[in-house]
Image (cartoon, rainbow, N blue to C red; front, side):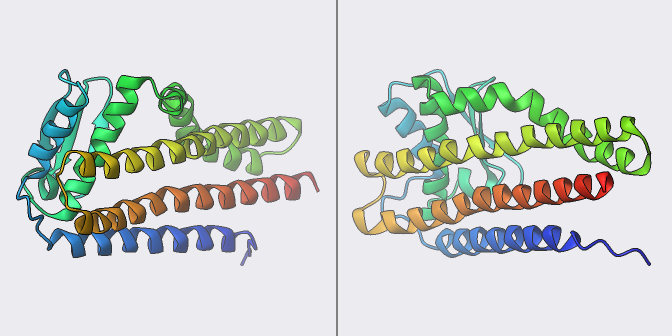
Length: 229
């Protein structure tokens, strides 16, 4: 059978992603069981934070699922998952504040957020077409195959660039969240550390995604070089 020595790069990336996912799930589960002394829900905290920043045109809604929380700049909506929206836990308040951090970035014109939004179309195309183009190029022969492989690699680089730009966006949102929780008195000083651990674990998932994509890019380059040889 044909053996591809570059498979180990995918395996390493998958392991990193699984470890990061397990850590965020573990941290979220742990601090979801710790209620904040203030007793405010994630939804209430989000509204309080947004209003404290003079942001009145952003709505807060509940969405299905777990850890499906996000901020949508198009509809200007903070969407909180079922485990965050009505929960008073340290994890819930940390996640809610993080999404409000994205709303603040949008309102203040945070440059990395704008750059990431501009990269979305290219990243979507890259995620869809990069591997098919490389695969077809590897199957074909001649100069046309090299063009397809190089095009696929270039599109994959767009995905990687999007993920890299996402890192400062996520880290900045978490940093803003911790400050907002403290400034608005939503969590006591000894409770902030719990929210911080949840957000730090979540940030690692983005780091792991970048690492996994870098490994995949190395694999693509190795395959392209093997094809030339």
